[in-house]
Amino acid sequence: MARTMMAAVFVEPGTIRLREKPVPEVGPLDALVRITTTTICGTDVHILKGEYPVERGLTIGHEPVGVIERLGSAVKGYSEGQRVIAGAITPSGTSNACLCGYCSQDGAGTAHGWKPLGGWRFGNTIDGCQAEYVLVPDAMANLAPVPDGLTDEQVLMCPDIMSTGFGGAESGTIRIGDTVAVFAQGPIGLCATAGAKLMGATRIIAVDRVPERLETARRLGADEVVDFSKQDPVEAIRRMTDGRGVDVSIEALGLQSTFEAALRVLRPGGTLSSLGVYSTDLRIPLDAFMAGLGDHRIVTTLCPGGKERMRRLMSAIGSGRVDLKPLVTHRFKLEQIEEAYDLFAHQRDGVLKVAITP
Image (cartoon, rainbow, N blue to C red; front, side, top):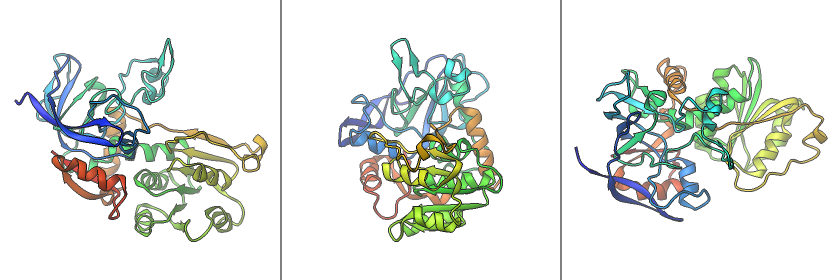
């Protein structure tokens, strides 16, 4: 086995480059996974732009599909050569956060304060998976075998995008018969739309301005669409619901404008499920919030991880109840990673998600 590998490395704000790095050493609880397919996430673009800080020299990426190359001495229940995925969130399974049922916040609490996103390690606090190999920590809590018959691209959305989008629908506690509005139909918003359908919503309104994304939203479960470049989405949704408002709104972009719109379309007692990553302070308008007396709920979700979460998502795909292959719109080799970042960061050519293969 080679001692070095190629990896996409954060150099400085504005620059991610392909570099040669040592293949990781495997500890007792780890697994070394040879990457067969991965992708670029919007969070990676935040890192590229310097909007989310990581250490220089870190390998980026948190959505791995691959094959077990080597297992740690204490890892049981897996075999080398097995096809697996691991979630973007890799919990230990033993922290206070995990035992409270919030694996995504694993490692967040310390004696010196609270660090959010504690369970997100790949491409954040440890080397990620836009590389030929990735070291998966706490392998027995995080490696999920890929069922026979499912391709890499079918399960590529499970580690993050699908888990996050579905998590937004789940956190919104959507009920059978609910009306749901999903603001922004990027990859996460599209998965939220699909998740709302599976949760039992019977009227899903998708909001975006890109015709191709609105059409994909319809394919994934949206009943109606609103092009916010042609009409005010708040007024449109109020009109469509005869002034009642929606039971649940899902915000999947991370802007003040979409957050506020998602709040304004809620019925009294409705839930705003927030998935966006915000880069500035949010303002809650007094009237939309009904001065705090509207019985509203505002909930946030960080991508649920761990092997059981991955198993459930792959089960949904294997059942045929959801098909996320249309989200992969472009394909690149690892040596083309800089070209892939340029396309994805500038949202050219109708890109939704890219598949990267070493």
